[in-house]
Image (cartoon, rainbow, N blue to C red; front, side, top):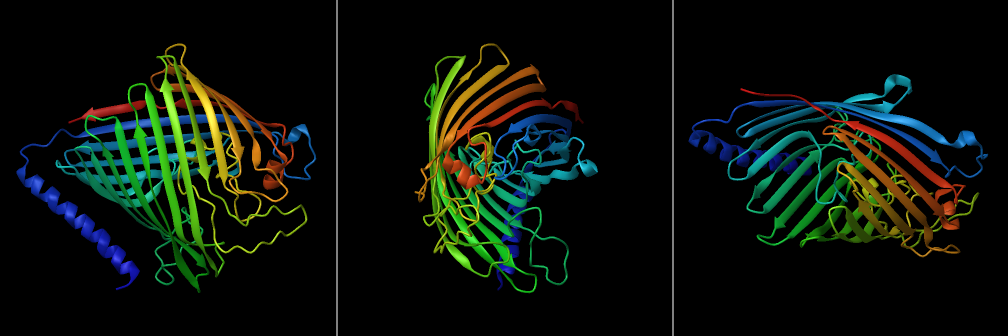
Amino acid sequence: MTHHMIRIVWAASLLMAFSSAWAQEEKEKDQEKPNQITVSAQLMSRGEIRRGGMPSGTEEKDENTSNFITNRSRISLSYERDHLSAHITAQHQGVWGAEGGGSVSVYEAWAQLKSNNGWFARLGRQELVYDDERILGNNDWAMAALYHDALKGGYEHNGHKAHAIFTYNQNSENVYGGTFYQNGSKPYKSLHAAWYHYDLPKQPLGVSLLFLNIGMQSGTPEEYRTVYQQLMGGYVNFHPRNLTLEGAFYKQFGKASLDYTSIYDLPIDAWMASTKATYRFNRQLTGYAGYDYLSGDKEFKVPKPGDIGLTHHTKMSAFTSIFGSTHKFYGAMDFFYVSSYYGTFSPGLQNAYIGAIYQPIKGLRCNASYHYLATATHLQELDKTLGHEIEVEASYQVMKDVRLAMGISLMKGTETMEALKRSTDKHRLHWGWLMLNVSPRVFTGKW
């Protein structure tokens, strides 16, 4: 039996098992809950001002400052009754004045069956948001955000949550060459995931375990193959009274291709660990501090301008952030794990940070933090330190469905930052933004 047939049989068996449980409950129930429909909308616009970080050789002028306004518009329709719910969201996102007017897409479109004893199955386009969103998140900061076409099933009851996820991507209904996938909406051909979470009874402790198996394709439609990489790890959240302690560890292994056309694979041996402590002093003031370590390639070399900088690699040791909400973790300027380093490989990252949240009046929230950023790998002729970033943000809840937010980030980079990013202005990296988020519930009806 082929791998494709095994996947189809596995998915069909999962649906049949859930269907039998719901069929039994349909026979036993006497009366359904009322039907409910909800229509909601979101209008979000964000203006940004960026200065610094221009490519080497760029003549420094005021015109090199990047100014633009992005927007996202959504309209959502939700339906719910006993054992059945469905949701669909249409989305437009783009830059003000862009050619073509931006893009229109279906961001979410799923249906879910749920039994009274905790079993459920959800099929369709959906967000996958787990734990602190470091590995799987919706990346909501990005206007396009992040969705997956997936079958998700599981069980949630008495503090136990167990989910299984299955995806299989294709560009079109191909009759010939229908198993090759490239340049689609997702970088992976298939994704299988298992997640388990347990909240201890009467204890402020939650523990999660996560396993991912990701199939990536490389080659051409005539000659291609699928290589699989895996991730395994866990997340812990302990919150006694005013203190919250978080910790995570993930290991990556399997194989990876260097690019879509490569015929060679490298084994993966990477890992990451993080820890964070948050303490609420009173209703107005909260402090936090943490440290992230993401492994890097041991043979990493920084070529000088004009050099090819070829290095023989025997494995890939740089941790990949998979499909997480990276903007939340590694500096708001998104220099790391959003934009790439110069070259294919990565020296990893260390991120030590400290900050405070101050809420002087109802609806107003101010957040200030400092990040020390460095590579995880030792670099030849360069120091590990990448730079120092200061971030200040403020948001105000104008009314229940209107929020105004703004922020500014300043980074003092180093020679290492300039070499890795091939950028100038290492001492003048500025970024500011102003955002309005309007998200009203337009209509709710029951019958």
